[in-house]
Image (cartoon, rainbow, N blue to C red; front, side):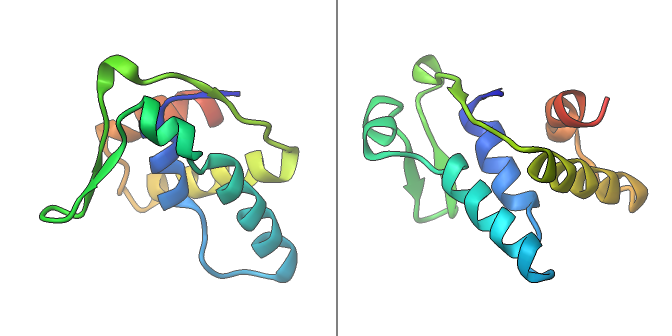
Length: 103
C-alpha cells in the first residue's frame, strides 16, 4: 500500500503499545516497515523540531512509499481507527487513513 510521510507518522502513533506477544511482534514489524531510511530522511528533508517535538519535512519532496501490510497488520490499524471513532477522538487528519483502512 502506498503511504505518504504523514500517513506513516500517524500510523506509528496509532499502533498499540501493549498486547499479547503476537500483537507485539506484528506491531514491531509494522513499525520497521513504516520507519524512514537514511536516504528517505535526506531526500525528503525530514527532521525533528526540538522546540515543538514535531516532525517536519519538505512537502514538495513527499514521496509515497509502498509498504507491504499483511492481514493482521491491516486489522490492527483498522481496529485502532475504529477505537478512536468509538471514543470520538478521530480528527480531520485521520480521514485519509480511515478511507484507506476502514471505508
